[in-house]
Image 1 (cartoon, one colour):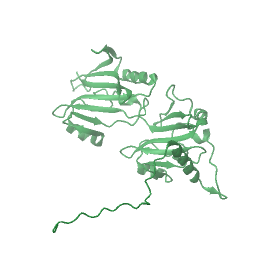
Image 2 (cartoon, one colour):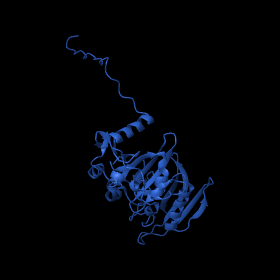
Image 3 (cartoon, helix red, strand yellow):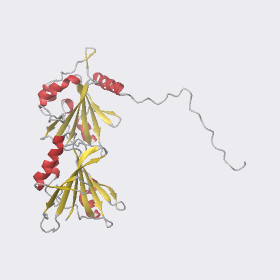
Image 4 (tube, helix red, strand yellow):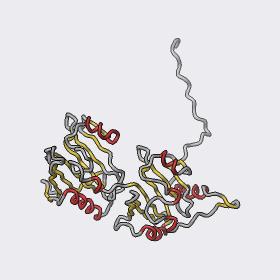
Length: 324
């Protein structure tokens, strides 16, 4: 029809176009890791030079990044990591580093803020006795070591099928350090309960996330990991219609071990005094504390109730804080 532009012809892709590469399975990924580790080593007399042995000297005497990754510190930015380890190479969103250690590969992952999230070492299955010799026995039941001075936690996972062990290192903050100094029984020196959304934005800036006045909810960014759990602590803030915090809800996960569940309760009782066990209407056990007004010029006391819940498929302590 005159005056009407015809649609452009569809162009079919060439018949010999290569299909997108298929994702690598676990076996191919392991092979790729080891091959890139080998090919990254310098040549000597035309042959690939053997790496140094995986022994106590290579690991160091503390559970922290070792080999060429020793300059790392928890929560470094990606730019800081690259500056500290110029040899780090990109692999998608991750970085990998040639360790130069026989049988050892290393990868670095980053969080949404592009800060160092974890250092993952993959070692031969027979490496466990060497790790224990270098760092001592891990914490009972959790296969976790701690470098409390450097702020690192290292958790071991053994995979007999692949014939390897994985050591995942991440920065951590002791759970007890999140509690106790502020009016809400937390480390925050100014109160959360009773604060307005405007005040929170001024105080916390980018730490305040997921704000929804309509949904009556906000979240305060917390440490990536604690001595109880390798996953982040969560701190939710419930808001009323005026945008004021009515309750703070702390969700603290603990690794699959009763020892860490009890350690969390011990930390709370150390900071807040002995708990008063109570039963809810549906017969659930709740531990309760009443904190005096802190500081004194703020008259409201705080009622804290803690119980076990399953959240996102994982057991956690749910700690609810409100004005009494």
